[in-house]
Amino acid sequence: MKRRTFMMSAAGAAAGLALAPRMSFAAAGTIDWYTSSDTNILDFWSNTIKPAFEAANPGLKLNLVDAGDGAGIIAIGERAVAAKQTGTDPQADYFETADPLLPAGAIEAGIYVNMAKAGLSNYSRVNPLAIQSEYSLPYRGSQVLLAYDTSKLKPADAPKTWDQLVSWIKANPGQFVYNRPDKGGSGGNFVRRAIHQANGLDPKAFMSTITRRKQATRPSARHGNCSRTSHRRFTTRAPTRPATPSRCSFFPKASSP
Image 1 (cartoon, rainbow, N blue to C red):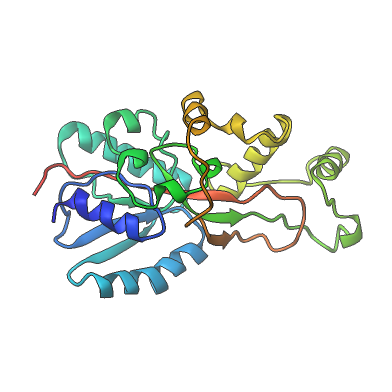
Image 2 (image 1 turned 180 degrees about the horizontal axis):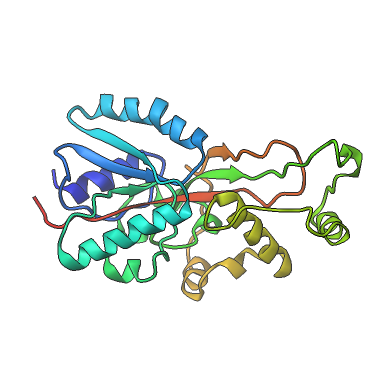
């Protein structure tokens, strides 16, 4: 079976995954997989998906690699773009979390598959509001929570809404922090929520003109397979953003078998 054919059939059966073609194996029967998600996602793939997948597909192995953070994923994407240009092996098949717009030029270089045209049987069942690009596909949601020090802030005084949080931040300069957006999903998601608030909570503000136009003419879709949820490491309840779908991507190999 050709690499691209296998990847498409696997994605179609696995609750909707974003694809890009890889034409041959780096090592016979090995799929190189990368994530920048928290340890709970890596553990889920290691302890649940990997053994089930390998049992159902004798001779195939998942090589699960922790890329560290968003910058790590982008670096591997840059390697894939360079490999595509030189006809060499990028040694990457699948990104569990990725933005297909990064690195710049990745889509134009042909390292991602257009999911809308990949022939996935369940694609029409994905909630269209969760699709931000045809070159990636949501398969789980991440609910980000905020943590605070109860020795310095009483639970009764903790902000419960976005407006209360903003007021608290202004009243307590230098006391609120979030991680760098390129170093973890929680920071990026906080920035997205801030932009979301500043734009009237309109989800269309996060979509390209092309995506909005296509969704306007697309039949209504239900949530379907967008069901798996991951929880970030923050543990106390405070104002949060809506659950943001995680996206994943496959990469091509240099040549077809």
